[in-house]
Length: 358
Ligand code: SF4
Ligand code: FES
Image (cartoon, rainbow, N blue to C red; front, top):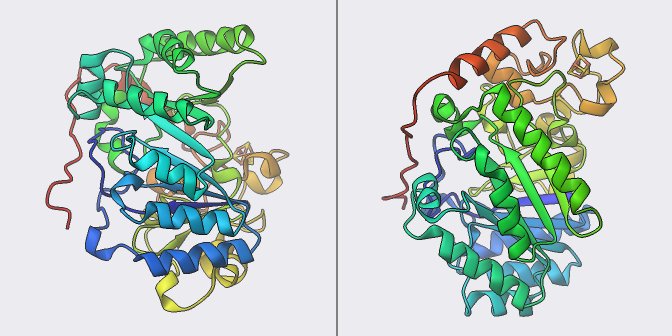
């Protein structure tokens, strides 16, 4: 269904909840234009229908317009996932004439100072608002994404109001997923159960109020869940991710699973071959690999056992049931971690640092 093209890990923002890996791939390791063009055409040949250009910040790639045009030529529906920084009156028209069909802009907060603090970027809010307005001016559908956590969760209503004022067609409210860099900041980010309950109520009532006008997608947090999310809608089922340096991954955090080998597009196999036959895509595909309790559970083809990366991070074995599931032997510990970190008084962040990423 979808190719997630991580064009770069470079980014002007420094969000403490970044789910990209701790060790970022450098500019000099990135695939070149020709390599991406080959990937796009191979993905289309393999039956892929959508391409999501992301990063880091995909706009730092000066060849983005060329890649969007190649996707359009292959009839791939293209979406740009951006911080909005750099999406100006030069880049957006060029992207639109190259065939871009949708834009998602991420926001940290609806208030200027807090947006600046949470993203580690000066005057981020007004730049993002200008980018979002431009997207609508050019007639493209717009999704506004808010990553919510303890330091902005009480402002969810304001953030929804901001998205409405920007004429968004879709709002995504996503609780922080604690992978990669975000794990370092868990104690400053994880909300309390009461805060989450309040958020649930805000989202539910906004969905009722805005039915037929705006779609609101909600990504629930894992640490207080009873059932896991169907991460990536199942490993190797609908989506593949290509990292900036060309690794073909079933999810963006897959490299965090120690001991797994992933193919690289530089090594000659096609996207179709990797998708169908590689060990990495087949390792956790379907249900055959599952251990108990997933193996005999009625939910196994709904949530696919949850998230492999989270299972590995919290149990040391990616084949185990995701601890977000109440049936996992590690579930109680996950709840305890959530509650302990949520009660922490920590507010200081460890920001990402991109300087010197050559
Ligand atoms: Fe899902 Fe496995 Fe939990 Fe069943 S036991 S709900 S399949 S994670
Ligand atoms: Fe890798 Fe969930 S993030 S399977």
